[in-house]
Length: 170
Image (cartoon, rainbow, N blue to C red; front, side, top):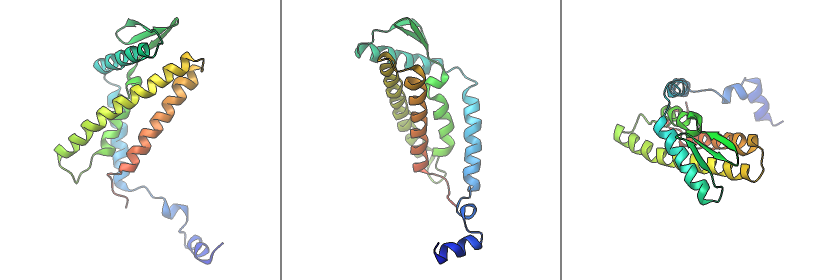
């Protein structure tokens, strides 16, 4: 161990010194939690329909031959697939607003960024859902084709948000 590292550890400057959550981040994380909880108080029917319709049309274009069985559900090969709030990424969108909002920019600039983010997030979500549908149609178990792909997609979005880092690091 180098002398500087040993001195740092002796002075208490290890992990606990270098990894401290900034109060602003803690506040934003709390707001993100509140926003996600509020998100689930709504049914997001317009977004569920738009997501279902997008997947229905895209899947049929890719040869999966889905049938629409409800405004928020499709059927493929005897399997009914319902689109819930989580399928829309509405929870991701709501939870990310407090993390993306930059207090040093104007409201208009923040809304402009959120508008672009909203479109990109919708398209990314449709892409991840369609990849899952295609994988499932190819015989990949649902837990991998949908759940695992969803987890990777959530993680990718959160990594992108953290790279934006609009909060103070001190």
